[in-house]
Length: 313
Ligand SMILES: *Cc1c(COP(=O)(O)O)cnc(C)c1O
Image (cartoon, rainbow, N blue to C red):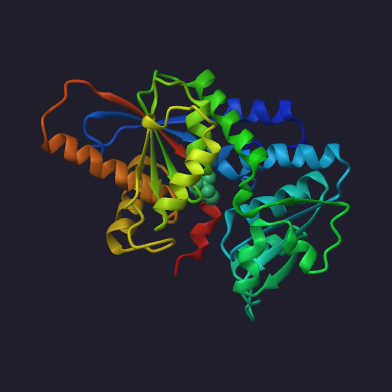
């Protein structure tokens, strides 16, 4: 049964998060581990994945303050833009998306969705866009911000981090087995950092960088991981990006297809495919090396992004 988030309340959101299924993967692709995928792509079919968690406290805050508009920014295939536009339509906010680059003659599927969800798109050149993490960008575009709530790119603010910590708490409370490891994709690194401070210390965290940004990801992990949360528990696999953001190759695409067919696991090529690929490689290395008798229980967080699959040509 498909569930939709129907009202903007913390209780309803937590209820949806607690009902996200864990899918056990039985496949020879992952020898020596007991792999489970937490299907946060299913928390809502459209306000999906970690973007839903990063948005929830932002939306609640906007509503509390009486703001009727959400202003945010992102690239032409940003899952965050997509989720924000959908959330605005669902919960009755106007949305303005500041998009990096020029307006193309024909909008891609993602931006078409965003417009259909009612988002007003403003295209800005790349140099202006760099200011988008700052509140000054909307103002510099002449947007009146009194009635608006600004969410930075990717949902990367402290309310976004609180939402991902909530995910950590839900995982703690709903895990079907006692996990040894948790794997997650890293774009900004906020999710990895916030999960590190939300999960119990017995779980080792692995982040897979989907772009060449080791330094900024490590800085984000530190920033959002709450002072004093054990950085030693967190491992960043910095070379998991397979050439850079959104870059794919035949090997990765074949792996993605195999996983979909054999394990019934739909994944996107920008984020989750790269995480599972890195995990698969690590399993194979374990198998080739000394055999550990212990079968690690591994949780992979499916952070969503399936809408972006339409971007592959
Ligand atoms: C945005 C996104 C991420 C990256 O999350 P960060 O918190 O920026 O590291 C991972 N997976 C998917 C599907 C995303 O859309």
